[in-house]
Length: 208
Image (cartoon, rainbow, N blue to C red; front, side, top):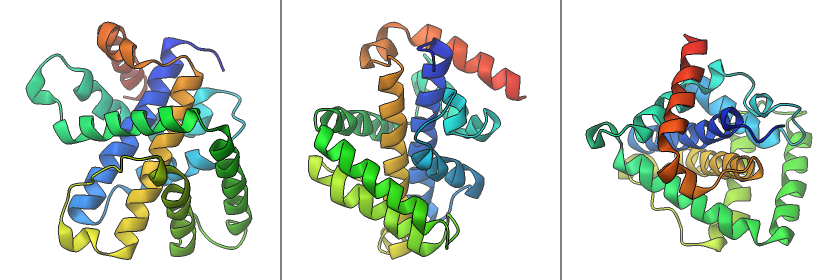
């Protein structure tokens, strides 16, 4: 995988897609199932040939690219403050994870166990969702500070919603790891915002 801007945009769109779906699930208890499957599948792809292979295809990242375009827009009213907060929190947690190779190794082992589980259950089965959520709770959450997820309290009290939220946050962390591996740095989002936005627009146009 090359450290091209295009690849970094694809990886960051993965973070944006996970953040948007966390917001949707927390508010309504449901989200776009295809987008959810794309995010969760990305956790299991550990040896991709190309960056886009992590997510399946560009079309499967259309939601994330759209969110990214809005977040990078210079017009403040088009940005979503809640999603910005999720993005900042995910990037901060990934930085802490990056300093803990022991936890990275542990996470890899737990993901391998998920592969075995998927021989018997579907990806969106409650047991699998719970297993992915547990990886986040056991390995990522203790790195702190915890991400405060806003939404409908009655929905957030449901175990299935909690599992989906944590599983999506783990997918967001996975995309953050990928973005960093491709040369992504937080200062690029400030000083190369225009370049990121142009590349995001180009990728969206190839889907349309």
